[in-house]
Image (tube, rainbow over all chains, first blue to last red; front, side, top):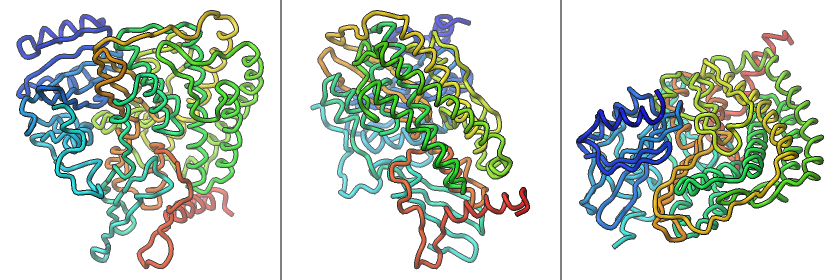
Length: 146
Length: 397
């Protein structure tokens, strides 16, 4: 199966569950609803055999976004599901750590720096600022965009 | 802190010669066996991502070069790949060969550094002295190419900053030939040593399943039979045109991690030789002029000596990124300790922690929790004593 077939099949399989697709050579960025995230990640990780490179939280004007970057190593393609949380003051979403063990640290880091709460995370605590010398009253990277 | 007769907590770090950055490991030990490990990172969080988002694209490349002293080509290379990915910018062929040449030299010097320290930790100081002696010519080659032994400043969006002209190629060639010969000697000596093999075989096993589930990369996962390597998965720069093998072994123990790194060094000299040949014949520019980067997202990665370095940038059409994510390979490899350290004797904990090659920035500092405390454990002494015991068993003296 070539690269574009794989991407087409993926898009067909999850039609109606993914939105705002950006297709570039070897890159597929798309938006998913929080409730569909685990099902899609399960397919990407277990059925397609992708590896989680990392995840990136970004604060934009109207939301906090979390973008997971999954690498399909045999083809060099990236599948990147994005979840947007409109409630910037209390961003909550499902954790993918129960599906992908390798997501534990990066989700803890996003909780630490962006204040994103991950439901069902096995160890919901700070990662990098756990022993921070100052008392942190808000996540370090949150609130840069008004 | 002593819990009861048999269960103790043994702290490693936060300031410790094994660790890439200051990190803290808490080993739970029952008798002489490690039964659990807890990790605490963030002691040297420097805010590179945030700082990079305040810098222009070109400034960011210089900044990320300083994330790690050993991977000071891998980070800028992954960073320029990410910026180039936003607009699918091409680079000149000559620049591609120069990038791969510098990247592979970095791999050799990093693996030699690791090999020396691994040898030292288990009481093989000859291996340590050999590897560090022959790491010197690699740094010399870097100096000839870039003017610096470290932090080379070679990468630019659209190509490289400096050319490797024919005179330099002529100077580099005999150094590479000599290095190749010496590396083959070291590899043969290490691979055929019965004591080294007995000491490391079966120690700190990371199973293939654990490597996949924990998303490990680089030699850490390749030693467990996971064949991923960015150089072949997404062959950027000159890797698509070069002939080399990805080294994969099956057992996942420290011995296999050693073998992967040893054989990778020989593959790297092969790549360097091909790059130097091509630099004699391929003519043309070394840099495409990139004036601006449009709004979008880009993913860049490179196979650093320790595994995949990952950079993600999000741009808005101005001259700086609004989001720059950096993920170094140790970030995904260090959590594998929770699988590989459980159930091993404490004498093997040191070499198992070292086997994923966390950066050794402060060698011989604070490793020994030695001294007045009655529960203090000298890891180095324990590890070296075990090697000595095996040596006596094998050689009988």
